[in-house]
Image 1 (cartoon, helix red, strand yellow):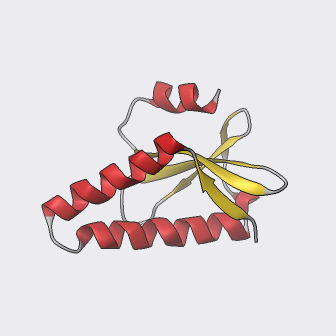
Image 2 (tube, rainbow, N blue to C red):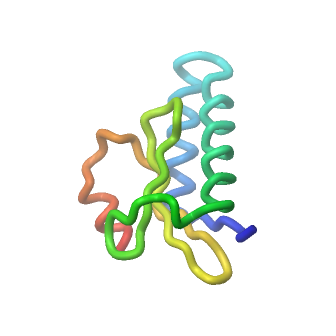
Length: 98
């Protein structure tokens, strides 16, 4: 399986979401993290099953939480460009995908 690399902005997205969920209820942040890890595992196994949204950037949705993982697949790795709530401005993904 390919390794997953987070761009710095995507890492901050994930950490911010974790912190927000954890502030809502103890342990909820850990549940978000676990769901994100499960989604990343699924991306590693079959990255091409996820739809292309912009050029070569694909999106995988988390099952329980309203977030998407936006990523690009390369020969050597999968690069996560964003981890965003479904109601965030889609232009943000476009800027990061460029």
